[in-house]
Length: 212
Picture 1: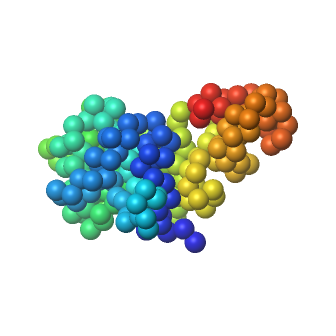
Picture 2: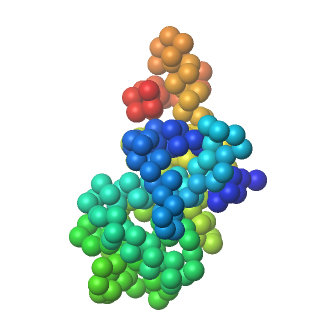
């Protein structure tokens, strides 16, 4: 069984490549020991081995998205601190309680209302960030699957700790993306790769365009 909090799945380089972000940025987030971490890592078994668990991948995805939306690190940290204090939960960015309306950062609190992370102003409950639609949650509110937004809907690719040891896989068939890329890089045309894995050629092309 994969523990989404303790089982290391990816190296920082693999996680950064999967999330399409600079490895140096992810390294800085993982190494930030000055206060409670926004992105969690675990101790690797050996130097250079995986150290990012699934919860860390989700946290990095959310943090990268919030930064791209223009939120400052202090405001993000305040929202995370509100989650921690309200729920005694260190995995603030891996919860569905954080949302944004594109203007301010909000935290979903116990009564299902939203509180503004800057001035505690109440916000309408319908304000749910688009990025949350890429994360699937289990019955206990833990992150269960992350859909990678760079892949189109017809070639849906996910990170699911239940399949592929955290490597990106096609959502429907669970075929690892790396398997498609590896065969294509041997010189096989897309049509042959598609036949080998019983996939539509346009799906294979979409996956290769993003992954390779």
